[in-house]
Length: 258
Image 1: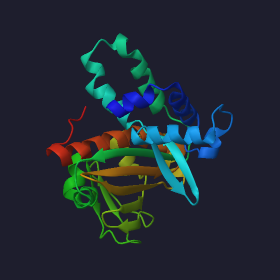
Image 2: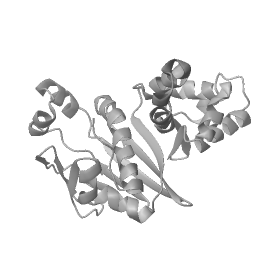
Image 3: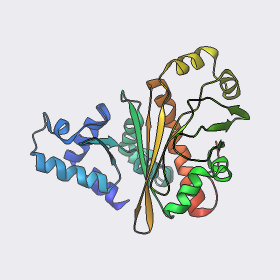
Image 4: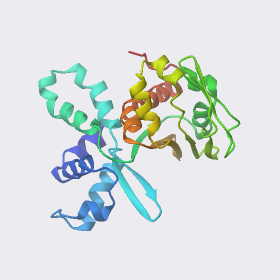
């Protein structure tokens, strides 16, 4: 937590977070535009924010894109705010709300650090015995690039030729297309026919997991790309799923559901 509080203490770094909250996925050049700071200073501030896990980065070709990462703010809220007078930590609560607000961006990025091994984390991402525990979802596939995936969720079997494995590099990177919004799935989760149709009209989204071993922990970055309606849902869903995954690997138990 020390790195997070230190990073947030600087007004210039808070200003950078505000700019990313207004428009996520910016390059260093874009972030420098309009700021009364030298490029080198902005780069140093971003390095501090990234070290505190408040900013995640994703490479798109030769461009390095920066995203607000709400995971540390969630941790502060969960571990500290409930133990003290909320009025004394109103600033943290407000920042948490700001960081989690939906923004107009074609992808959602979330990063956390898990005390595990890449092999164990890969198993947790691919083995249905694991995914069912922390996610409530099971997959039927051989995890070979191009292979079809069958989803089992909310008591429904979801099959579609476009549900496929996009990338599968064991212990480092995994990507696949999102499930199909079938009428049966919508009924099982309480979605109206109108909401389902709106989701189904969007381009099919994809999710990518990047595993990066850093000493005794593994840095897990989740990138979900898709339409705004889908991303609006996963912005709330992924933090809960990843937190439960982290808890399962570190303690042996998933987080309690609401």
